[in-house]
Image (tube, rainbow, N blue to C red; front, side):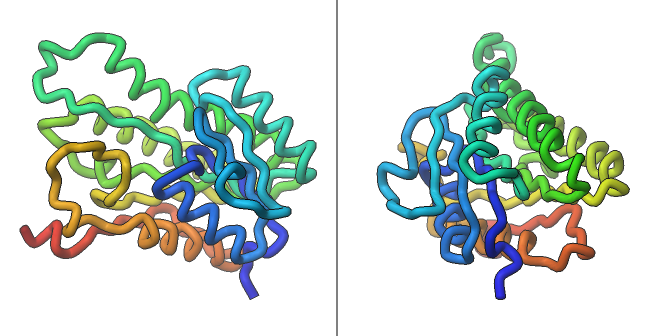
Length: 233
């Protein structure tokens, strides 16, 4: 039996890519899914009694607060938070990078994680149980000269979660970072990249559900993975 059965999972950026693949696996395993996405709604594509979609921006405090209230109203609680929303822009010449580009990445990749973590904890701490899982990426482990701002935002989110994990472990709350290497998704747009050497979104979703299906006493703090073909190139 899946450990996810009857769990309420709040997931950001679930309208496509890794988020959508993960949401579908969660539903298949008996979880209730609250999709918090800025534009497209997963519920417009997928009909399921245990799925709700809510439009909001993870970097906007009022949106996040309202989203968690809506989730609790719909499903009664939040058992799992999956921070999946993220954005990345190449900054190949930092001297020509405008402040708006920097702030967009930091606001989504760091501020958004902070806001969602904070609101999830308000629900999880009273019941002394919960799991916060963040899709960081290997960009939070290794720097990239073509994307230093993106890497910085991911390193920052990783630092936040590392400290949080130590802060809440005695309260029965797990904190996990999932760090996939390059993944074949819409993230890349029309850039010419070796997609055949990338992970598939289903690979990442498999790792996420593996982590979430561990017994309550098993904590995976961080998990790193890549397509071997990408590393061998």
